[in-house]
Image 1 (cartoon, rainbow, N blue to C red):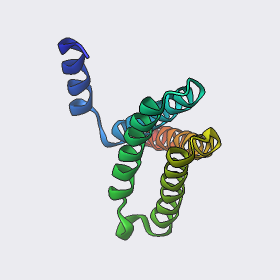
Image 2: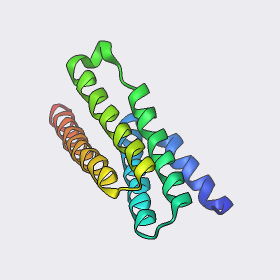
Image 3: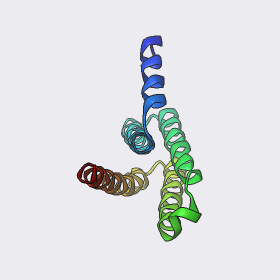
Image 4: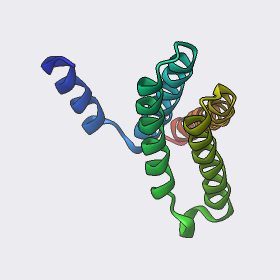
Length: 130
């Protein structure tokens, strides 16, 4: 990674609001899972493991950021979905079977779309009340 690009990414993260950071985490996890699928297809075991590890770390970060006091049942449900994704990533890493990666990617895509719609809805309500 070039020095300029690294500085750009750091500035983008530091200036982002919570919603944008959440979406960036999902985007990163999905990108790494797609890289892992490609590595499976190319029989690149090292790249598969590295990509799965990076996706795993992001999903762990999403899990650790859940606030069960505020989020209640929604936080519990998200935790279960994240655990499922983590389990699928582990299975993919152990077996080299990309169906586990695809299962995890499907869940993350659904959650990402849901968050995008929720964030957009909140912004529209804020705009109307302003």
